[in-house]
Image (cartoon, rainbow over all chains, first blue to last red; front, side, top):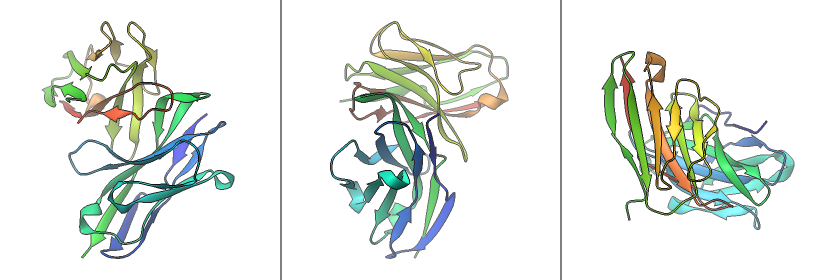
Length: 116
Length: 112
């Protein structure tokens, strides 16, 4: 069965420090992979997505993610965190059929706190 | 462009009451979804639809019903609300294939 694991429930970093959020997936075919961010009381905002091609994907707000098939991972990174990045981050895999997906399966999320 | 719109945004129900959440999208998308979000569990798929007149069960369908009578609307019904259904509900839509999925802003439901 398809699944997504985010091993870190909470992460705290200092403002200006680098960030890496981990995501591992289980899916038999070539995955469609996503990272979303959710600020408190808000909806989901798409940070970036990977469908195919270059395994290093650039997103909004200075985030990037790297797809590593051998490790079944899609980790999210940012070189320098800002206080406004404090939020909850969700990794998701699109599952369904070859050439597309008909549902998203989410990880449990990682809550990021940023210290000044 | 409105995108994906959910109504109502907030609701308090008493145990046993019924209600319907409405999701409307103006992007002519084929696929629509209802998720619930609970602390520490991410978003879990309740039901989804791959086109007008179709519905399918997701991970956590029990206690919910859905209907997709019109392509632009996807309704989520709670026939007899329970406190375990207190959650934030998100609707989403996408065109299919590898296209991006778009989410609504969420509906906060409390069952007392």
